[in-house]
Image 1 (spheres, rainbow, N blue to C red):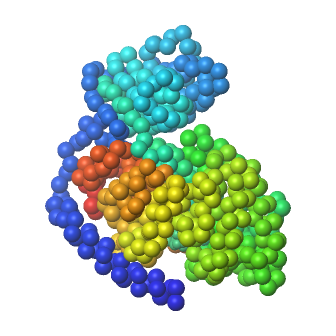
Image 2 (image 1 turned 90 degrees about the horizontal axis):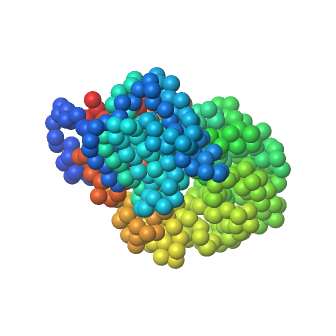
Length: 532
Ligand code: IFG
């Protein structure tokens, strides 16, 4: 029945999506047009709060030095790490030596200077100022995270390859939303730490600052838990389509968390409960109400599994799993799922989520859950992740609005705009279409600040683009579905509302094409973007 409903839904949404796109009329322009080449400060993505070209540029060349000595104490070490990482990121494309020095005495000497200034007004926790003149480039921020983001902007101001001139000017910038995330489902299809590190590199250059890892589902359990070893050893041994699956050891997870952290990307781990638990229930008979272990599942249906809410052993499982994961996770959030618990009666769902949320709190973390939690009892401070779409029932949207009014922050992940596993159009090979097709423009042309009725911008913690992997099992497919739409996520999360304009964005996006090519990213050359 569920599959049928999805199909019917698809037909309905397809109609809407097509009529909506056609109604836009933007596509009426001739495809053949070539955008006038944008000046360097006009093609930055995500668009900065303010940028202006002025004065002579800086000769970025063999003599360029990166200077990091403009901080003291612990901050100095972190600033040096930011400088080393920036040097690494610039050396490849430029072929330049770019030594990193932390001698504070030559603070105004030639080169790229990273400067911490706790009093720098208006830059907030992640903002920065980037000033380029003949003597060099000065990156100023209140935090190392801000310096990192300044460096990512500088990467778009230096030549795509080789030495050259960084045009004179100033960028003063700070993000609109605190949370700018991407989710990767490594449960349906297994992805290695190396593959995820690559995705983190790609996301961090566009100032995405959260990676939500969907670690467990019906088809796979992907994180080793000491107290429950069969979860990963057995529950991680298959995946959609019957492949070998796999899992991350705690060391793997720590390595990815550290790698992401050095790029100011917080990892948000998700243990999906009480539904989406077949892999766990196949691993341990005692997690099933009837005491019988389930078969491992390699299909793509949802909603058929549920933890045994009435069994105390279930809560020992929840406590030990979340406790081990919390100790591995420096970030503030633990995601406990809560979606599609179609085999859990509503009262049981609410009772279960009450206890699971208390467990998260006991480990000092903040709950994130899919927005179905709004129909139960969200714990104080719990964050709701909205994954509805244009056809979501008004009552569901109202429940989220009520929770927002009650003080719960909302992360917006509308399935018919930000689900990266939605096909671009009928011809897209991988992906699903239950929320309709999502062309590049539809993923970008909306305003998170006024998207959900009754959810004011002040309640919007940010945006996140999930990539579910029922039909995606390779790096190529991952990149094809994520790029270029995740760049739209980056701009929706970072740039001021006044910068959100499809006509300007599509040109700036096309200017990113050569950069994506240079990084060997297999992106979709969407027909609605004038790629050079
Ligand atoms: N919905 C399910 C996912 C996945 C997705 C595929 C959520 C929160 C459809 N739940 O999205 O597990 O199957 O597009």
